[in-house]
Length: 328
Ligand code: PBG
Image (cartoon, rainbow, N blue to C red; front, side):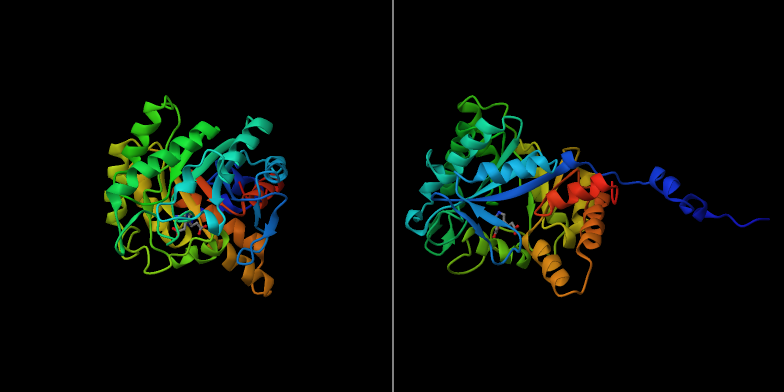
């Protein structure tokens, strides 16, 4: 009897592509952008080679090139000046804040662009924590109405979707109720439902100026020893009205992505965070790896694990690799 040969389906490029189990689309990519206060600012982020902070008057140029690359969804982070930070992060819901201005400008110039805004306080609080403090501890419940106000201010500026990343318990419900009261019943919530306390966020904290001034985020972000806890956290967000769930970071958490995909029927996002980006950039710069090959392989791995969409600083490059037929 002849041997059975699975490799028959790998014999030529056309067949290999036909039997691919994972397909990528540019529409599943989301590009993060940092919005800083001021005018005429377009500054390099030292910890994230190739990424920049833009003031609201410069952001349209950045968005134009992202759209040209074939990316239609962006995720905006606000980076206020030091003098505007306070104990309760009140600049976060300033209707004329840099982020709100940027949203208005982008939606005016590119109405088709899908603008998602990050809802968190850590960039806006003087102490750098994601919520209000009671002594040295985060006061979960007093933080909720503030987060709700922030989300409403983003929707009023024209955001298409809000993405709470603070990890306070009950924030999805608080935000949903506030959005509904303000007649934003059609604005979806992308919840950072399984967000781990991670050293992969290091470069982001430089980019957004949001490192905690004392302690860490381990009381409100998840312990990387745990997988089932991600399901418990996400289940609560589903009950509270989340429209999209998320696993963050991505690459070191592929097991969590796979488990979440099996468990929930909501769309699932993965966030390939700053540390994942900067590691690839640094290793490529040192001549140790091939950047494009590494980006292709890791990106496909995240989709293969089960992500329906991916937030990534490599989004424009990935779009080009898809166009060139390297992946997809
Ligand atoms: C804010 C927030 C962080 C990131 C996204 N939203 C930082 C943190 O939680 O410390 C990290 C994103 C990245 O590293 O690319 N809470």
